[in-house]
Length: 286
Ligand code: HH2
Image (cartoon, rainbow, N blue to C red; front, top):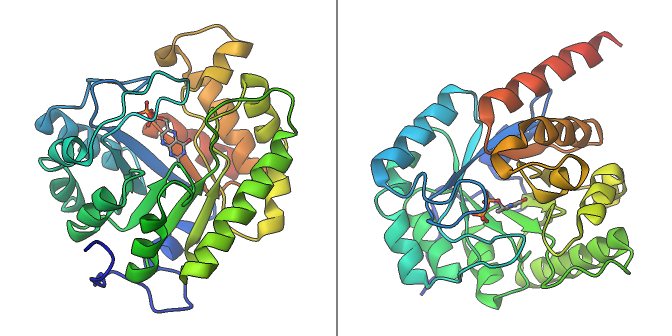
């Protein structure tokens, strides 16, 4: 039974969830800090698997200005080689961390493609679902979100990158399908954030195209989240290991903000917050 209970944090039908509204009402994009409680995430695998270290990282990101913390317990490894894990393993990794992170007072989203994990996370205080398969992997996900009236990040994804396709058209048809699934299940459009999924099922070139043409997603009339942090397209322009991609991440996120992104997902909260605020201050003068 993952769909029946109605969360006390749910929004009234037909209105944007208050947490999502709070994230979207700022003069510059909200910053989502990433916490990976995994041994194998592409940029920080193993660093925050231990409960105390994970909590210290959440505290640090909050002090650095994170508006929301995104907690994931299964690497989605955008560049292949992900080790799928069971819901039990995900829950075992989340148990020592999630409710304690929630108690620190900043909203928490759950980065999981498994409805049973998302349901458990909601029961323990998470408020937003981050689904890297955009409601298209497991029909129980949208049913759960509709039953809880919970906000969802709907990310574009594809099992393989195809350099021959028009990536913007592919993303648009994927979102149309996700929005249709959401509407059929009764998940209100107001509670959906779209994410083009930088690095997921895309060549580095296509990730750059998406960032450059982000404005085309405005046609959906929904907020857009961008997570370019430390991703491989940066190395295609400037050869580097994930931990050496801060400059490229910030450049990509500033461009994304300029082209309308309302939430930025990052591993490097302090630097990203500073960059976004300075850019906003300069643009205010223009
Ligand atoms: N990127 C990653 C994971 N989840 N969710 C959204 N909505 N958007 C993203 O761009 C996104 C995401 C990959 O980054 P990370 O979580 O650090 O890596 P891993 O999946 O290897 O844990």
